[in-house]
Each structure stands twice: as C-alpha cells, then as structure tokens.
Length: 249
Image (cartoon, rainbow, N blue to C red; front, side, top):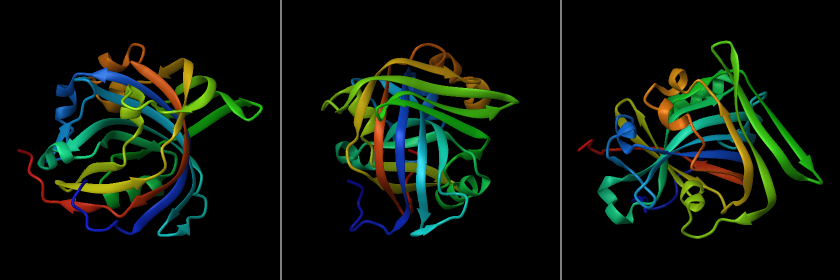
C-alpha cells in the first residue's frame, strides 16, 4: 500500500453508475511519455491496456457540499494502468489518465487545479435503455470538432462478480489514482465496494482518437477491443490528493 498512515480527508463523494469499459491492448512504449514521475506501466499477463470508459457521475459533493447544477453529469475518459516504482511488488494497482471529458467547465477546472488531472469540458449526452430494470443498451456521447462521438455497449444476462485473476478484475479493481501537477506526481485514493459486471454482446467506439488523444493511440483503438463489459458502479469516495517526491528515474 502507499505509505499513508491514515486516509486523507474526503474531497469528493458521488455515485458512479453504468461504467461502460472498452479495453484495448496497447504497446507500453506509447504510454511511457505520459507517465507521471515515479510510475511504471502495469500489465496483466505481460500485456498493457488502455481503456475507454463512459459513466454517469451522480450526486457529486465537494467537501460534503452539493454544487448547484453540477451534481449529475456524464464522464468519458481514456485511462491506463500504473504502479509506483518505489514500492516494488507491494505497490497497489492504480490508474492514470490521458484525458477526461465532462460537460461542465467548473468541474474540469477544479479537477485540473486540485489533482492536475487532464480534464476538458465538452457537450455531452447519454442514453440508457432497460427492460424490467436491467440495462439493455448504454451509450455515452460527446461533441468534438463539430461532430458527436460515442461509445457504448449492449450488456447480456445478469451482472456477476468479477472473476478473481481475470482481465476484467485487473481492469476494474483499482483504488488509487495518479496525475502530474506542476511537474510533481499527485497520489489520491478512491474507495468503493467491488463491482458486479455484465458481459456484453456488442460494443462500439466512434471517436476521433488521433484528434483527442494523439495519433500514437489511433492504431490501437481502431479495431475491436480486447474485452468490453459494463460495471454496475456504486457510491464512491475520492480522498484528498497529496504530492509525492518521486523521481522520473
């Protein structure tokens, strides 16, 4: 575990729901240029991944206070998987982000200022279809360069616990995040119970990957994902971040 004596105070609380995760195998060399100092790319069975993730952010509260007109919104992000180098085998699984999209400028500004997270604000929308309370189609959209772009899934069957040791568990079970703020690595903890997931029969990504994330990502996100699933989500707590004195070597 990161060397925290006790959990930091709660900075943000919310519920994350209907997390559509499209997971792509990627050359770890592509991710190296984006790593905050002191981190290494994490892998599962020797394979590195980047995930396109869309979800609903509900009842958001900062320092316990709801922010008018900023409580419920969509988020879409491109994330990858990392560990702290200095903790060796004891380092927990963690995530870092290439870019995170939300529909409100104030949310994006706060995340950049507090954590150094690469947020941007764009028009967004979502659609969730269901039968008898079970989701049958989940899609998230965002507008970029005068065109609506989208990612989505069609879940099948019932939600199930994550199989231990599976690729899906590696993708979904992360409780630490890292970002780079003014040249320093910021570490923060995310708390939530384990999620159940739906397997999906169909997934789709219609996105200007090169324009949003860089041309180096386009070849890896062009074809079908290595895996895709829909996580049910839960209440979450994001702890106050702290800056670390980590070296890039």
